Structures are given as C-alpha cells and as structure tokens.
Image (tube, rainbow, N blue to C red; front, side, top):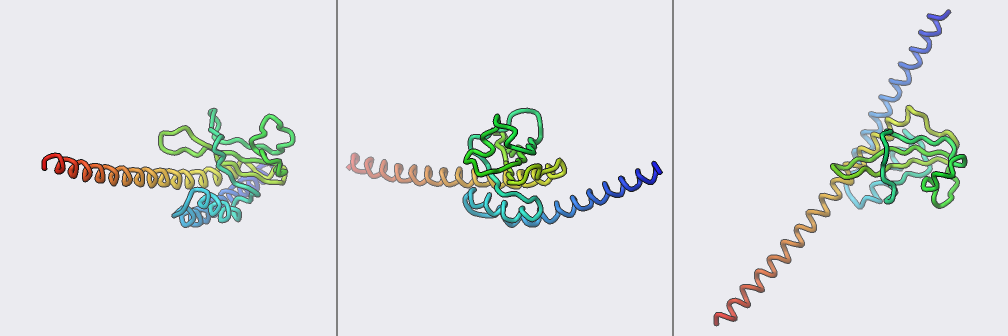
Length: 178
C-alpha cells in the first residue's frame, strides 16, 4: 500500500511538472510577441493580458518605489488582510487578497519587483513562482531595451546639438576672420 501511494504521488508530481513545462512553453510564445515595442506601461499591460491565461491575476504591477531586498526569490502572501505591514501591495485599497512578488533584475541595477495581485485569497502557489520569474525575466528584457532606446535617443540628441554648436562655432570663426 505504501509503495502504491508513493507511485501515485510520483505520477501526480510528473503530471504537474509536465503541465508546468507546457505552461512555460505557451507563456514564452505569448511573452515573446508582447514585449516587442512601445512604452513600458503598454508592454506591462500586454504582458498582463497574455499571461492571465497561464497565471491568473487581477492586476500586475511594477511599482516604481518597490525595490527588491533580501535573499528570498519570491514573496507569497495568501491573505493581504492579515498583513497590514504590507500596505504597498494594495495601496489603492482595491480589495486584493493575495499577492505574488518576484524580483525583476535589470543589468547591474538594484532589482525592482513584479507584483501579481488577486482578489481571491491564496490564489498563488509555490509552483506559480517559476512562471512569475519567467514573466519578470521578459519584463527585464523589455526594460533594458527601453533603457537602451532612451540612451540612444539622448545620444542622438547630444550629437545633433554638438553638430549645431560646431556649425555655429565655424560661422563665428569665419565671421571673426573676415
């Protein structure tokens, strides 16, 4: 009886792993098309929309003030009403009951956090953490490329200003030489 129960448990674990792998493949395909272009807010909205089928949530946020501290790789809260010490997870009082928070690591910067919120208590399980990390990794790519695009734009503007100043200096030099 004991070995039969163990076989049943192993079969369940194998099925859960197979399902998780299948979800990851689906999520990867969906996310790859969602992070392509646009402002970060639009990217987060698209990622939220496409990932809801794999990892249900009522809200997905990247709070600007939320930095990732500590050694843990995730923060799972089953009932926010029991945690008044975490008001940042439901700052607008929208009735969220559970949260899953994972770090978003962008190059060498301090990590920020991706927060998934649900109005259902205990909506997230430890098995959801891997999916949340995959979403966070894709958002990190989008944020890094968004930062590079901003830097390139600033560099282009600086080059244009430098060229204009150089033209002005030549004109003034020609004027003084004349």
